[in-house]
Structures are given as C-alpha cells and as structure tokens.
Image (cartoon, rainbow, N blue to C red; front, side):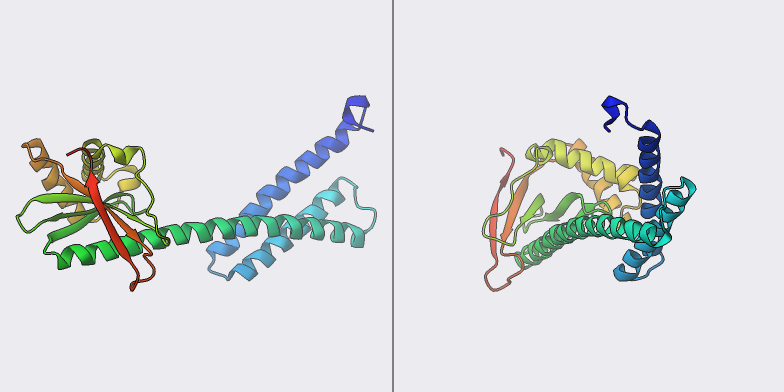
Length: 236
C-alpha cells in the first residue's frame, strides 16, 4: 500500500537509510581506490564490491534478506547499475573537461608561436593552476604592451568572450590583482607571472593604457588548416 494510505513508514525509513549509507560507502570506496592509483577497471570493481556487500549487510541487519543468494544478487545488480551510470557520467564529464582544456592549451601555444614569429617579446601567461586568467601578455615591436585573450575551437568558429571578459579594463586589472595576492584559486601562481603582474599593475596605475586583442584560433588541432582570427578586444 502507498504511504498516503497507511503504508509502512518503517520500510520507507529503512530504504532511505540504506540508500544514504550505500551512496556514502560507494563514493568513499570509489574515491579511495581511485586515489590509490589503480586503474579505472579496478576502481569500478572495488566500488561495486564494497557497495554490494554493504547493501547485503544493511539488508541482513534489517532482516530484509529472504535468502543470501537472492540478497547478494539483488544488491549486486543495483550496484552494477548505479556504479555504471556514475562512472559513465563521470567519464563523459572528464572527457569533455579534458577536450576543453586541450583545445585551450593548443590555442594558446599556437598564438604564442605566432606572436613570437611576429616579433613580440616578453611573452608571459598570467594564469592560475586551472588556466584561468590572462592568456598572453607581450610587447609588440614598438615596445607597447598588449593583452591577448585566446579563443580556440576544433571547428571553424571560435567561441565568444564571457561576460567578465567583455570589459577589458576590469578583467585585466582584477586578474593582475589576483595574481599578485596569490590567494584562493590563485595560490601557487608561478612566481615569474606574479612578478610580471605586479609590474604591469604598477604601469597601469601610472597611466599605461590597457589595449588588447582577442585571438581566435580555428581548427586548432589541424596545423595545416589552422586559421588565426584576431580582432580588437574592447572599444579602443
């Protein structure tokens, strides 16, 4: 019978408790096995085993096992399904994350090479450990500082700027300040990048103009058909 018509609240409570305990145990065991350096297949097997036997233990504690074989089979099936979905989602997210970062890294490397060939000097990246920040800063052949935001894609159209990146003055100054402070997500920033950020901030405070370029890089993974699409960053 349903709970609304006088169902077994005790059974509902046991099920909710079991779900919570299994979720915690599955997550903890999977994290522990993965952190130990074992392969994904061993981590998956370990998670399923831990989850299955935890479920059997909880069922036995609540006298919900009609037979040991049936109890093991039911919990194993549930564990395989839940862990499979979990690992599938995690793998998909991980693949997208790796693809995104690889595309960005390739774009920045290609842009650095182009700028170097065009005579830019003192090229530096002012970024945190996650790769967020100012992609490239350098001096052109006249010695003027230019800031570059690289937008790379595997296809023929580079992505656009984020809302924060649209205001070049605010974006550059806040990222330089974060690099100098080296706190939070910026803790551990490269010392050379931090020194460059401190110097650039001083120049800006002394009246230096902030001028930049959005460097689009299309087909970034295909050097022979790669294209650079530069445009002015900001209104100046």
